[in-house]
Amino acid sequence: MRYRGCLRRYKIEFILIFVAIVKMQNDLFGKLMDVPLFQLISSVLMIVRLPYHYRKLIRRVVGKRFEHKGMPLPEAGQAIRYLAQSVFSIMPKEDFSVESVLRIAAQLVSRKGVKVLVVDPFNRFEHQIPDWETETQYISRIFDEFSNFAVKHKVLLILVAHPTKLRREPGSKRWPVPTLYDINGSAAFFNKTDYGMVVDRNDELGQVLVRVAKVRFDHLGGPGDAFFAFSTYNGRYTPTEERTLDHNPPEPKWEHTNFLTEKLKPEQQGLGFNEGE
Image 1 (tube, helix red, strand yellow):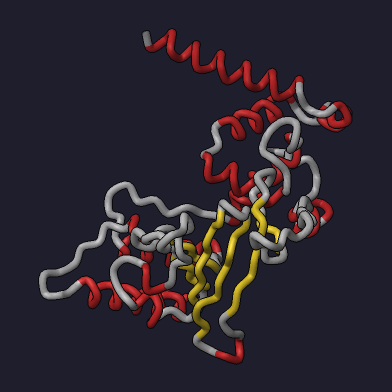
Image 2 (cartoon, rainbow, N blue to C red):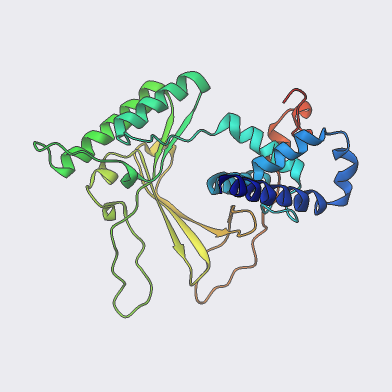
């Protein structure tokens, strides 16, 4: 049974490889002829097995939908290699405490030069609140640990948290825009953050509100609202005018630029297949 399962699995993978190669755009075949077949197969297998999270990152970086008609294989391979050197996930198998995650993050800062740490979401942690500490005191202490970590290691720490269940406005189907005080647990989410932002999606109007609710240092900015349209093609947000029931702004100018073509050096902008890999 194991042997049959193994054959079935590899059969599916090689079918996917064949479909991916056959359906690639014609103008790529001349370039791909210079790529060793085993490297080509290896790259396709890498793409097939990519976690969903990395697929989303790849399409945002390249600016194209992650499929054979939207994103050529060389661009996908280039993005995979770039993200493998730039983005690192912290997923402890056992201890998912704040202390454990920050300890691993400190190692990544030292070894990989990480500059930004995104904690998403806050309720994913295994919170162990001592008997002598209230939830408010615990969250306040955790915020102090985050702040001290960011200062000590000179990184930008972004904490993503979700609000409690909101109630609809009376006589309306619309949910109210949440505030930082609506996050479950403590007012520390407002009081102790340097920059507090709220992201609210309005499906009825087809727009996303990004509200800067707090800025601790006024010389670096102030509160305000910005509106964006979400592209289902590549997962990017494009600035747009505010949309209301009485005002329908023109279609935004969607951004499809491949960020890597500008970021990488010319010698790094090849097909994404490097000799010796």
